[in-house]
Length: 423
Image (tube, rainbow, N blue to C red; front, top):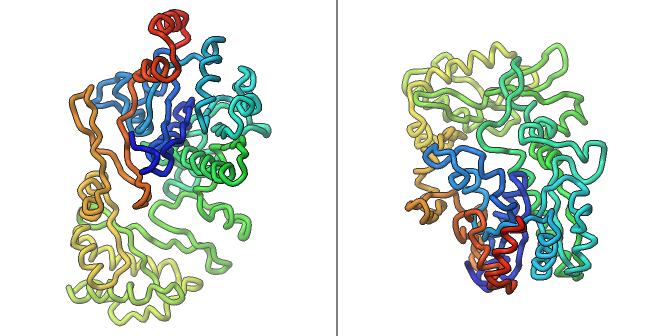
């Protein structure tokens, strides 16, 4: 672990009781140097059983979700539903600066471990509560999965193809990740307030609200234009008054080996030079000649017909289909064309820019006899750098270190607490 002098949060301790909704919050604080103690129930957190798994071997010590969201944490087991477990947790709170939890509202209060009680134990403590819908309101006690959070936050409906049912953003749990990042941000803002005033506080973080913030301008579009933004796939739909109606603007285009994003328009859009450069390139190779001499200064998104625009798209796509993503990107840089490849995970992993910046982090997993590559720093600070301190902990991996060496329990007491299902 890094020292408090060479990391942003060195010297601060975090008690992380969260499930999969909040793992990312503790990871962010830990990667910035905080001493994060992951508190799991005896036997391990159930989220260890969430796939995908290392080499497709289902096992609670091989969950890739667990690996990726619990770096830079030490791990202990503790049953806070037992009297002895609560007493131990209170001792830990005396040493802590942050407590992260994702239980239903009122759960911690019912155990005598809510913010009012913890603040008495450790004045200035920051308790961050991560829940599907927040601590108050008619949905406060509703349960939720990541998909429910994405759906009720509005993200699902703005994804998908036009005319087809909405879809989720696949693979990674976006609602959990969104709320985790917002929880880390809220915890740090509360910390800043504590540094200025000495006062701690209870940070209430709603997964639904965090997801709603990720929908960009969808709320504003509805407020101003009374139009629901819905999934339109490769297009952006521009509402226009009658008789013109909706205009479908394409942003994702097929090419020889995948897809690229292109901003193709003119007029007031500020894309005249880029669009002209793309057309000139196609014309040089004897393609899209039907558009040769087209005046992009006269391009008007408020009046252009869909038929005219589609004809332009067809000509451009025919040209793009003769080029690979790499060829298009390389030439776009030379010609000043606003174009970017839609990268696959494999392509991202070997991206020369990310490699040059040292983005990827190699993390040792001695129990697997392997080193695994992780995504790296989200931000860079020279004086207090971000870094993955260690791989995610095994169940109870640091029980001895925390309970014996730091809290002073004997081996005999540890054995008794384990037999009583306290640790």
